Amino acid sequence: MKGDLFSSERVVQPATQPGMSVENAKCVRYTVNGEMYARQGAMVAYRGDLKFERKGQGVGGMLKRAVTGEGLPLMAVRGQGEAWFAHEAQNCFIVEIEQGDRFTVNGRNVLCFDPSLSYEIRTVKGSGIAGGGLFNSVFSGQGRLGLVCEGNPLVIPVSPQSPVFVDTDAVVGWTARLETSLHRSQSIGSMLRGGSGEAVQLMLQGEGFVVVRPSEATPQKAQQH
Image (cartoon, rainbow, N blue to C red; front, side):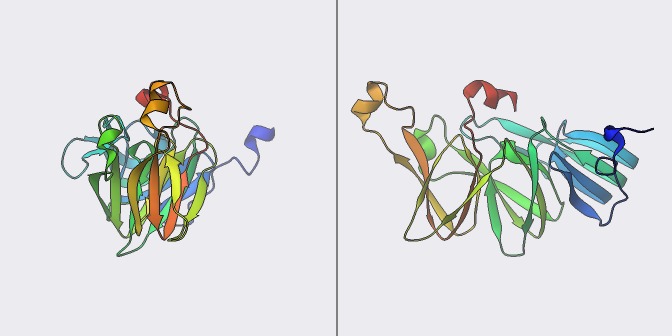
């Protein structure tokens, strides 16, 4: 068979390492030898002896979605083989979390992760004013976390002298040593008159990085994720 579709850059090559790796810009490959976790519905292909089990509350848990507080159901993948994960052709990235470190991420951006990682659901400080609260999952331990993002994310450095303000619908995640709070950029009077549509932002202070996607999640789009 010939043609551009079958060029070497598209044909899957043998795995060069166990665990998680980026197959291409839109897909993550996971070489499973035991167990791993992924968002339900994200598996696009697999080979080998693998079992997929829906996870409820408990170890698999439910990752809270930003603003809406809706859950992101997970599945456990067990056995030996290879699986490929993707979500709506969004761009894929891998975060290496080291022992003693933490990474806070929006549940809608989680694709898959190593079983050596643990997470807890937290409400962002002061987010009660943001329509039900802003929920995120804090990952810790040592391992890899696969993320998806609409478009190419912005990774913005934060320093003590220069806090960063991010739209709550655009934030993907942030590193451990950052403190968060919600900031109003409009007066109540301006909001009542319609304002700019950018009334409340997430303010990050300290030293680290914040990851932002180059688009906002509309309410209709957020409900589909």
